[in-house]
Amino acid sequence: MEKTALHERHRRLGAKMTDFHGWEMPLYYTSVLEEHRAVRQAFGIFDISHMGQVLVSGPDALTTLNQLMVSDLSQVAEGRACYTLMLNEDGGILDDLIVYRLGDTDYLSIINCANRDSDVAWMTAHRQGRTMMTDISQGRSILAVQGPLACRTLERLLDARVTSLGRFGIAPIRTMGPDACLARTGYTGGDGFELFVPDHHAQRLWDLLVETATPLGGRPVGLGARDTLRVEAGLRLYGTDMDEKTTPFEAGLEWTVVLNKPEFIGKASLVRQKAQGLSRKFVGVELSQGPVPRTGAELSVDGRRVGVVTSGTFSPILERPLGMGYVEPAFATPGTVLTLTVRTQRYPAAVVKLPFWKGETGKVTEWPRGQGAKPALGQPAT
Amino acid sequence: MQVPAELFYTKTHEWARREAREVVVGITAHAQQELRDVVFLELPKVGRAVKQGEPVAVIESVKAAFDIYAPVSGTIMRVNDAAVKAPQLVNQDCYGAGWLFAIAPDTSDDFANLLPADAYAKQIQAA
Image (cartoon, rainbow over all chains, first blue to last red; front, side, top):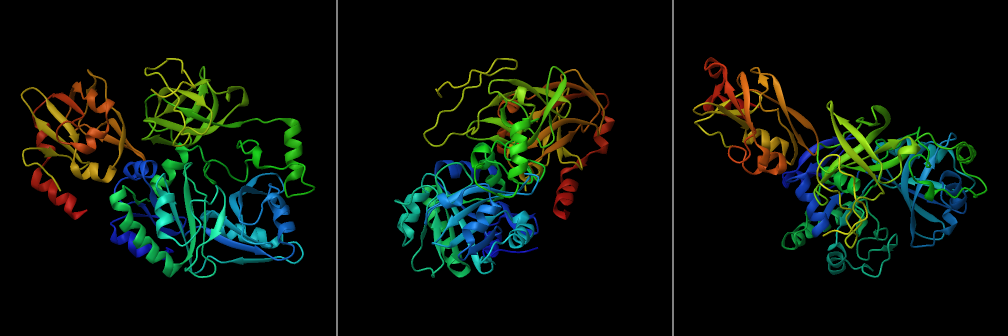
């Protein structure tokens, strides 16, 4: 298996390791839910160096990216980033990614580990004009520091513009080499940063962060909690919640698509689908109590299957099972009560508007206890 | 790893405590340690007839769900509703407050098929 530059540190911390698409990564250090809570209450430190880093540069970089992606990257200023999708000709999603504009004609794309090879091959094959594409992952680590205390912790530790960096901004980190930078992006739904630094700097920074974390309630966090956090925040996982057979509209990601861009791969298919309408829509569901909604679990209404779960977890913050998946559009309205079947047992599951967890200052929807009760959504937390 | 001497054990990591009229059942510290965050319990109905070795309950962590097997044949007399409401009890106190269900055994012979503490301790060390 492949290993990141921080691999030995995970082992020394006693992490339970797992094979994640060919990379030996920490699943948890102590417990998934403990690590999840730490990220919501203080901060978590993640090694996400297994993700791909592709630099797209040159006079025609923007043209190439606008052809490949659904967003209009000409709207992304230097020092800013955007979440976007890369489609095939059928409008199916090849990957979801963040593109950071580092300079006038320099863009950094962070792509999912599972798709590194196929994405690079696809992007390279669709270069326009004078565009250079380089996989710069080698020798570079990615750390994520996420949670309400992430900002003040990094402000103290880094020689960089941290506090004043806006959401989806990216800025250089001084004293860690010419290419080191930090971005105010993340996969937890709350505040946080992702740091792109050379391996040896990453190792020292990791040690410093772990040392600083303990008295503040922060801690290293593995992929297990990375998954429970993103489900709680209503964030999709490529390969689980969407794949090549899913269009942005079905996945509830219509907002990323700039349909009146002159041209991009998949545009014609999307225009057709927009005219025809959807056969399924991505939704979130909540249970008042019950098991974790597992991938593949059936969602039904009056005994008829209307959908399927793609992701699920138990939220330690909202203290209830959460699921995401696809249903027929007629049943996608928030407040609709569906039946979830897990291991032959049936449980009521209410469709809710994503995200489930609305951030540090957000309200929590109240789901009355007891089976069969109608959900009273939108009420403030007591 | 905690393996209380007075209990009996199954290969599938359940413990059984013989009381006057029933056998109380739970999962061992070894199992709980592997499972970590227990978030859901599906316990059998009171009155259900069960056979030794039959899967009768489900314990679920964030990552996966696992079957729990009846250590003896008999009838389910009680289930731990407190643990159903607060599944983390199983992680916190698996031999005490985190007990799962109690069986009125059909026969005392089933206990001969269970592992005494030292045999179970050997099994988990070898793993």
